Length: 533
Image 1: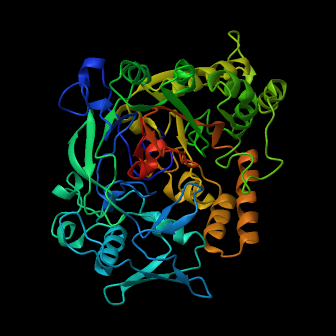
Image 2: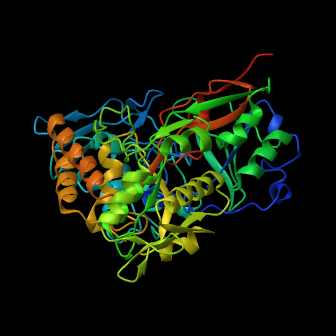
Image 3: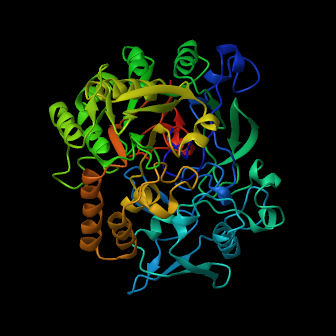
């Protein structure tokens, strides 16, 4: 989980609640203890839960929200496909007008018809500064959204924002319900009504979110009639409950997923992702704000060992938000492990080793705290390994565990083992992560990174409709991160899920940082069918 998922990149802020023992939620699906084995039900273990179920406040902005649909959706290969729109949008020659023809006959779960007014209401409400949606800047390009009758919506953009269609997977809320409430605190935030394949039946915070199939869903009633997300922050507890049969599926770190490899009744799914783990280097700290310290830490970390040992090969080294192998990755920005080089950078910058081996410059000791969320074993392992590598270069990193409520107030000066990543478009993650104007804006730009060259490149990348111009802009960003890393990127992580073999249909997509809730093999649970015995 990063910042803003309690994650590092912004969008839906997640605040996971620790389930302290197996008995804390011994029967997440409700009813008798055998419900997890019912042929038409599924109980999955996830690590985080949303703060809200309202898309007006950020829920489901990347799709797969279950209760809602967007104008568009992603298929298994992350290609856009129609959802509430009956086709992909018509785009004007100048790239500034997107026109969507809406699907006819769609109804919200309360029976009210869906129409263009709901689309206009949703986007205008999100863009309203009075709405507490941390992801508003993702729609910065929108100048206006208007309805043309009941079945057509037109978006007018301020500039030709190349990935705009990707933004329209955002769920649509019903104006006749949400429009009559306080958008930030009304009942709709916890009792949503949508057009999606499932209806919310209950939400016990810190314990479970339960859904039932929508019998009137425009795409057909799902075969999985009851779907439960059991909120279990602790990795070990999640694995234990999966093994005991209380869960049908769960997201697990590599070391725990390995324990199910030989189980003939379960399958392990490895989803490729853009999900990275990084260490924030706060600009407002005398040590982490020093460019020489940043450069030294960036090459003092042994990324290959992290991938081999911590991820057990389920991932790859990270040198920035864009994974190696992506067409957006800038070749030549890989940083090899070079401890001697790190020491030389520090020596040349005046950071001299003291008697205890920790460096000092102008009376400032090269030491800083590094926070990670308690219960997240994988993030803890990354933090401890990073601290060990840093110490070899003469920098003392003190690891600390805490909840996000404890960590967030400290982010201006304290480092955090954070995460983020989005496969949809390079703008989606990098703008929120690196733009100086968003420094200190919740979980956006947690390090308060400030680089005018990067700021200009990010604006050029999001405002140009020319792929070559965009590629050059993001190349500039990645090269600048080599010169002045405001973050040390460690690994890109494959997401591992263990699922009982009782359905036909589970698959995985290329996943963003946020996983388990909208992503995972259950991204398409509405299409699953019970296996024939």
